[in-house]
Amino acid sequence: MTRLYLRLFLAFWLVVSLTIASVLVVNLQLERLQQDERSESMRATRMRDALVGAANRALQDGGEPALRDWAARADRRFRRLDVWIFDDTGRELRERAPPRAMRGLLRRWEHGEGLDTVTRRGRHAQVLSDGAQDYLLIIAAQRPPVLLRVLGPIGPWGLLLLAISISGLVCLLLARHLSRPIRELRVAGEALGSGHLDARVAPRWTARRDELGDLARDFNHMAGRIQSLLDGQRQLLRDVSHELRSPLSRIQVAMTLARDSDDANVRDAYLARIEDEMERLNALIGQILTYSRLTDDEAPRRERTDLRELLEQIADAASLEGGPHEVTVHLDAAETLSVDAEPELLHSAVENVVRNAVRHAPDRSEVEITARAATDGGCEIVVGDRGPGVAPEMLERMFEPFVRLSRDRSEASPGGGVGLAITRRAVERHGGRVTAVNRDGGGLEIRLWLPPRAA
Image 1 (cartoon, rainbow, N blue to C red):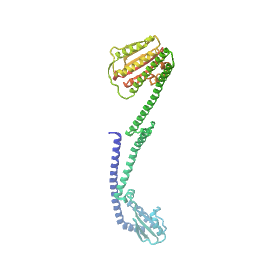
Image 2 (cartoon, helix red, strand yellow):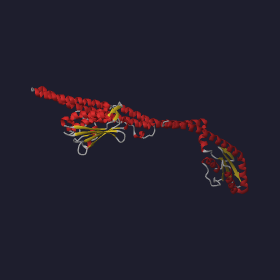
Image 3 (cartoon, rainbow, N blue to C red):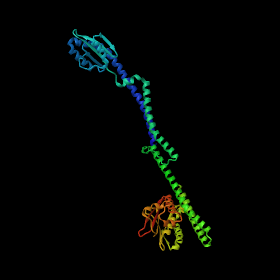
Image 4 (cartoon, one colour):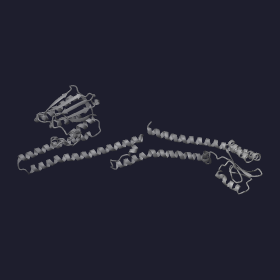
């Protein structure tokens, strides 16, 4: 059960349960309070005449002090009744401030209007006299509880309407809580579809710890990936255009010079230069196509490959290439070393590194190839040369396509700076990694590591 599903289920269940429970509890409480109120009202009505008689006897027997004491005892005895006694000046015998509802009655009493007996709105007023002074006795029922005063008048249908309103408010807040991030995702998706590759969902939504937060984070990751891929394609297109323009320009110049020359030997030299440039162009196009194929997310077609045999083939071909400069290739690999990989892809990855080492190795030097099972269970191939090495800040960038490390290296690399990019991409597709370090004493060393699952 997912977090969002559980949250929705619990929220709606809680709303319905609280609505039903609130209606039942409030209804039962109102019924109890109303029943108590009716009982107290009936009791007060029955006791009213007895209270008036008791007050009159207290006044006759003990005067004003006895009447005051009786009023205090009556208040303590009858919790739903308030007893008030005022003299003919409007002073309450126990020095209490009268409530606002009694002020009109008191004004009439103070002005000498006739108030023999008055019963109105739960209050009973009775005039008492000891022969020398008149007193106004008011017996008032206390106000019902707040819950009864607020909810009692609306009735059961009003309670139902109140419960529906409260549950509707809770559901509205829940719907808003769920719909806002979805609306933000829709707006960001529309912006991304309109070409705004920097469109992202706001951090306040990606910080959520539920499925909507996961969705927002996945959207941002997808948008970033799309932007990275498109930016990479644009950069690749610019780099390819630049790399193709150079040999084509040289071919055009050579053809013009060959056409204008009357010397056959000069024309042959220019035609040979055109042939070299076409070979460089063909190699560049081939490596661009290989690199383009490696940018797909398709997994390599693995098969059991004899790594020593593959390295021997590469070493033999590289030795022939380095022959004119007396560059030799030395292979040191275990007799039984095999990997689970795509042979053509792995061959291209290692060959690019070895040929690169041969091209930059000084005359009468040696390129070393070492292959061993790594201590972590993987397989490691190390290719080292004694060339000029690479500037430290370029050791990571040298595996990016079309990166020029120096003019000499550019001229010596017919692949246009794509070979090492192919190597890294091919090894990474197998789950491995490629690193480069400058060797002590001069030269460059490139390490290719394949993970245990491929070894």
